[in-house]
Each structure stands twice: as C-alpha cells, then as structure tokens.
Image 1 (cartoon, rainbow, N blue to C red):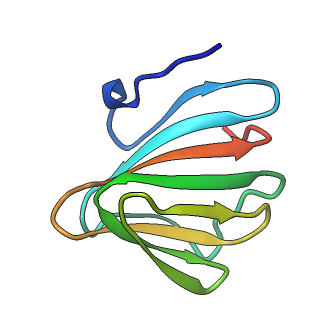
Image 2: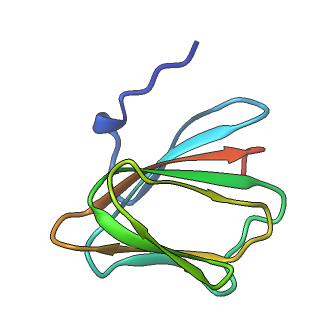
Image 3: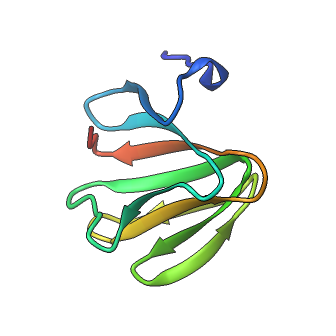
Length: 102
C-alpha cells in the first residue's frame, strides 16, 4: 500500500506517487493561472482530474466544463486540454495518469 497526505505537498505541480501502471500528482493553480493549452496532450495516458478545492475551468478538445470541489474529469489519451484557476482561492486538484506520464 502507498499512502500520501496530499495536504503536505508543495506548490504548483508535484508527482506524489506511482506504480508501473499509474501515477498520481497534485496541482495548484492561482486564480487566473492556467496550464496546458491547444497543443497540450498526453499521447498514451488518460488523466483523471479531481477537484479538491477552489474553482476553475477545463477546456478538453474544445469543450468547456466548470470545475468545483467534487468535480471529476477524465481527459482521455490524445485529447488537448487546458486547466484554469478561477474564483478567489487556488484551484487544487489530485490527478491520476494511467499509464504514468511524468
């Protein structure tokens, strides 16, 4: 078993654990900050993004979705994506990549 306290991770983007088949990371984006863009994609890995706190938006292959605590988004392998923090507080997520990407 692997156990990670995601409250203890650093700022921005941190890979916090993984196996041969998957990988977990935490991400924090300040309001107005974004990551990714029209060319950003993971060619061979699905990315599951779970919102822990804050608000934001995801644009996946041109389709937009609002993000709020409890949101779970699957970004399938090859889909372009951009995540943006919005609102008053940082957008904090836990991301799982299968297979590992980073």
